[in-house]
Amino acid sequence: MCPNCRAFITTDDKVCPYCQFTVGPKAVDRRTPADALGGLIPHARFTTMLILLINTGLYIAMVLHTQAEAQGMSFDFDGRTLLEFGAKFGPLMVQGEWWRLVTAGFLHGGVLHILMNMWVLFDLGAQTEEMYGTARYLAIYFVATVMGFLASFWWAPMTPSVGASAGICGLIGAMIALGVRDRTSFGADIRKFYMRWVIYLLVFGLLFPQTDNAAHIGGLAGGFALGYVAGTPGFSQSVERVWQIVAGIAVALTAFSFFKMFMALVAMKAFQ
Image (cartoon, rainbow, N blue to C red; front, side, top):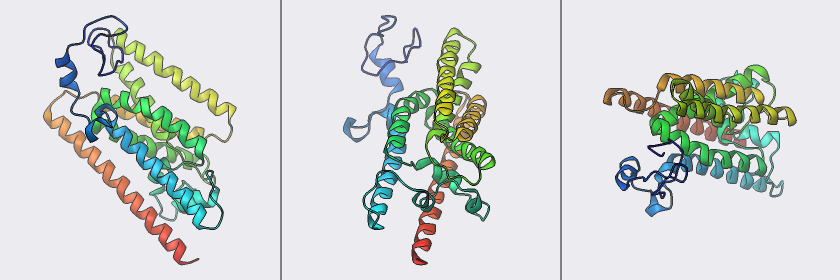
């Protein structure tokens, strides 16, 4: 971010393309730790790339699963396949499969679905992590995903639902919260920019009735609430430690949810 006009720029920019302010190398180095994998994954997108890889890996696993089930290779999935891999579905959730609130946020119904979500997450995730830091970013994404599918469960319990858009909407909500907290013109610009994203989401939901609007609204509300409470890094070491613990819990619950999903899938195949 440009230290003068606060516009989003890349770490390669030595001069801000918006205000022509000279960005010193020290400022860039101070905010940007070493890239991962020899520069293949920029640090600004490292966490986001991990989420993208998890989503892509699960999508590939579902493609291979449909092929193994003698259905022929398919890049779009039916309801049965989605349920087997952990889609949100009310009747199963009330029987104790709460983990579907988490796993549903990493699954996608088809190639267009995953491409659209990953395209948005690629940039939005980096922007959110830059502003909130990795720990808060992970916590916001997790809470938004769970809140989104809770809202979907309440609104349409009998309809299976999947997609990263609940977590993505949470990131949008967190960025709006940042704009609300920041009373400067910079905050106003952020707020206006991401409010336009909300309008686009609403229009998209109206144009495509199959969209899980409840998950979008729930994720947006969850991300806004947590983003507003969390604030940005820099309060104290003790506060940062708390958020690191919260992020660790979110990661652990996500891993445990996928473990439960895997065990349920194995059990389901054993009875067939």
